[in-house]
Length: 316
Image (cartoon, rainbow, N blue to C red; front, top):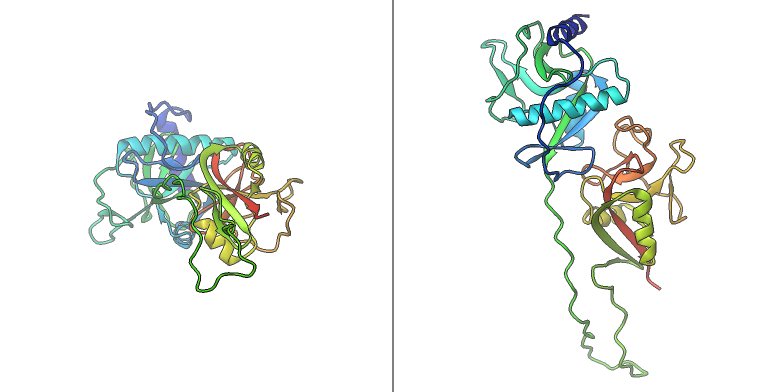
């Protein structure tokens, strides 16, 4: 109740729930739906699932991420405005979220858990209160202290993924030397993968960095004799993981919108590697298409989002 009282006081002091902050657009290097830091070094993942700070920290850690730190006014404005829009779109009662900071009981000094300097802050005038955790009112962008056992949404952060280099044109294939000539003798080289396609077993794979909706991505794959990638083993998942970035479309979808997923190419759903909260994903509303998430895990998202993608086809 104290958490709610502090939040209500902050809202009343701010004068309104609507945001009036001026936010300059930041060129995106993170995938759609993920906030890019102003220095283009971090991706912020807004998780609109109220939980305790400890559970938020565990979830971010399990995904090889950190509870977010905010180091500039630009990041505070951009992140809180985006979070507020996300929370209100989902109809959440509370529009607050945890940040990854704690306070020293002896000195009262705040520090970021990721070790970055606590050089920027945006405390509300009446922010002081019991508790050793920091939450942000996304309606105003102001920071408050709170009891770590209260429940709030949270933001995880990760380093911006390294860009995938563009495919290079493969040199003309050459036949391998052999100690003995085959019988009968042939002058035809064995088939080799097309340029920009990678081979695993009897399949070819191609990543396209152009962001499209899931349906348009599938059409592009079809125009090249392929379909969005289906994955059937840990080996194949790791192989495809080497070709994807955050948010990359995969070939799974839920055509009946009941959280039962199938592969678009019609192959059997015999392997999966969901992240937490999936396939009933609470991060996004209409989450019926499969995309790459952190590390080699999967998540679901709205099929209308624009993301890069991976195609797959069988060698004929």
